[in-house]
Image (cartoon, rainbow over all chains, first blue to last red; front, top):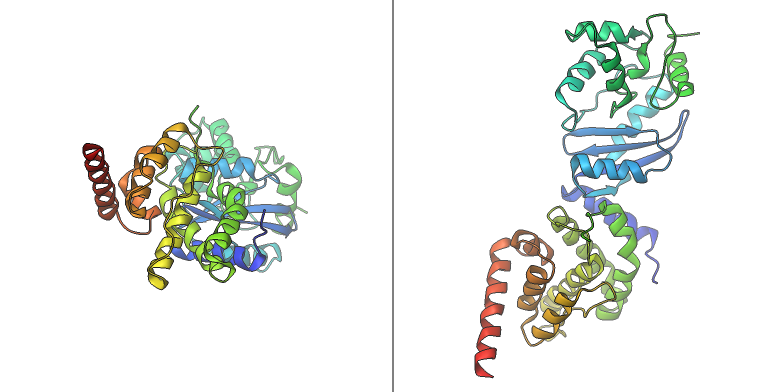
Length: 188
Length: 154
């Protein structure tokens, strides 16, 4: 078996990203303060931030949601990488990236839209979000929406806590939620 | 069993080494790198329209063969013209087609193999061959006409 050189491999990945034929370009950011993140972008914007250290399942989900033309193409993620770096360094409080929510169902999108208004360093509760989307009894359903949030950190589900103020849960694990809230100064 | 189309990343990782080795044999080391990129860009263009994930190895080698043919046509009009023969994941229909279409011009042969062996639509075949839907359709029907004529003459 012939080895494909790094130069050739990277050249193809860059050409593929530039071709406009990819459904999703992704990269794995290995060195963030909360571990490795899989970040995906489509032609419509950022479409996935995943905590899964084993990306196989994430790639399958991306293929199901957006199509099978999925390739690791680091250059396509340059602006996302930069904004996330700035956020983790405490220098960025809001993101300017376009988001692609095409794969998100209607109710989820309404909740996430409301969630996106919760500002850096603030928290809200599941019940409050439920009331804001006109479904005051749906706190549990809001929890499900948070759990399936395709764009954690950018859509700040870490800022949603229980009515008692407890952290409750997080798709990426409570340690990460706590770290993010500490970074933002929302908890001490 | 019909398998789903894997994410392109997995397809690319699985076949990149063999495609590059194939291109080096066919076109020489100097040209293999450019043809490697051309082959996988063509495959990417057609990939979204694949209906199943079977025989991807034979599929990508067919695309590679055509990339070599096209490059040869630009540089050396008499380049050797063939469709890569069956590999171990080839299905009988493709093998039969490959034998049946052995004497056809390469584009016609590739169009027929991709259409009737891999169930690709003409849009995808056009993309895989680096041309378009109409050209792919014409190549396949010209090939079928030619086969029919050969059969009548036998």
